[in-house]
Length: 179
Image (cartoon, rainbow, N blue to C red; front, side, top):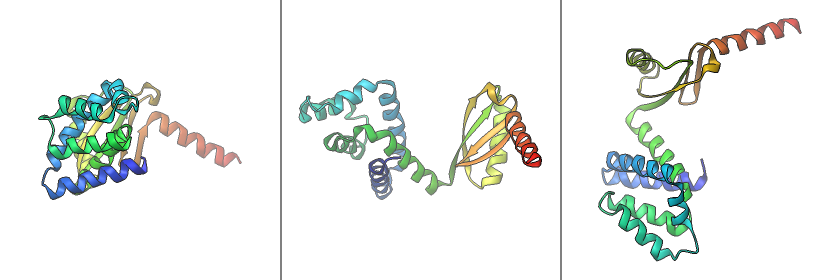
């Protein structure tokens, strides 16, 4: 994460806490990030120095006014004025991380060879909540290279119960005994 994204994202979060708008702004940021991810040319246009700054700010007003809280809209305008709109994703990550810390939420990425069904995901979520003591937001990813089992990344801590992980560990142990 960039220093600018970290600083600006935390600043917006601090303001949102003061104004009791954390839930609203988090939802808005998810939507805006989706728009920017789906339309990277929009960020390019809003960051283009050959387009006068007033025109870029007017484009944002026309597109987002009424859909965002005034604080969030002004935040985006500040990023445009400072030439930092490309850091929006990093700002969102910092905002979300601060939100999760304050609300006892942890993100977990679950990787399996085949997709888990809803009941399996719910069982896994329940176990992870017991381990972490936090509410878990699961994201699922499939990767046939892990062969089988489950690999979970919970806030930077890796729980590798995959076949590939076990084979790698076995290979490492065999190599150690041969040396």
